[in-house]
Length: 265
Image 1 (cartoon, rainbow, N blue to C red):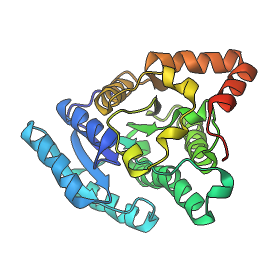
Image 2: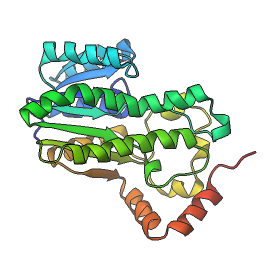
Image 3: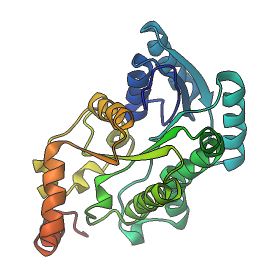
């Protein structure tokens, strides 16, 4: 799908991958709807897009509240028109062992990214199906292809998003609505590690051979994924190599991840 003259909805658009993707899509001619909790941060992103000649509107919303998501999307459709592209990039959750994770935090990690992606997709999908046109993008984590120690709740939430993504592909076969999964490695300029102190040190040492990427690189890959209708986009290249090694040599890779991963103290 060419992005020119489309309406693209991007969640988690206040910073990181979401903000970079919104800017990249605006440069391609999309009119962009920015969704996240913090209105001031969204306005900053919208101002940058406007300065570059693009168009963006701000929709602050708690993505874990289905009623508010539905109302927001109804308002968005009234003000901008029917959504052509959805990018579910909102994410949250700390890396913790099961016994370190409270039930409330486990529920919060499932709420974003999984339920947030489900709600947004659910309320945008009917008009896509009616028009036989649309594209859903879910931004996920490398953990769905190779779990590691000390991130149980986070891993479960990301697997939920993966299951949703795979199920959508079956549900939407032949409808004209396509699905792309984006799986980036560690994002160097993401605020995730700043917001979640102590998480970065839990990256298995073997994973440090994979170069970091930038939000702009992920955004560029996302745009290409939509325009070229790709099933999955994995970056950087070394992450693809890592996944291939895990597929063909699962037991040695599991041992390496366990041996070089976070240990209980």
